[in-house]
Image 1 (cartoon, rainbow, N blue to C red):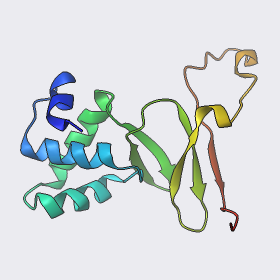
Image 2 (cartoon, rainbow, N blue to C red):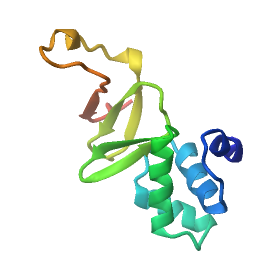
Image 3 (cartoon, rainbow, N blue to C red):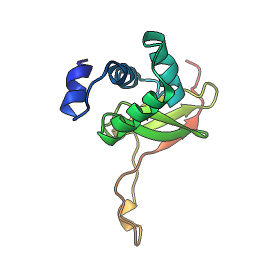
Image 4 (cartoon, helix red, strand yellow):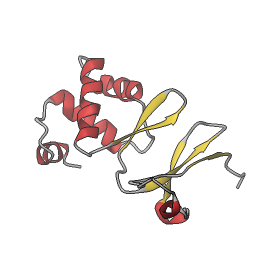
Length: 131
């Protein structure tokens, strides 16, 4: 993926640190927390600070490159899949998996009185069945 071009096309001034944070967060399919992004980026860029990681993640969210979600207890995670989808969280492993939008049907949002629903997602928790 062309991280340099992606950042520029979203009006983000690319720096080596921002490129490392963006590359890690956007390439990840594991829904990392900010701390996990920080630890992952530090392997390649040991001088990066926590403040730079947090500020860059905030900027990526603001510009629509990743979504910030509260799916783990007390921790926000970052999701590079910005198209509508749902999530499944495995009780045994804590792993967060994407669920295709069309796999779940939600009805009745138009009948809620006094509420205009802008968006929603379903978060399912459970265990994977043995294969």
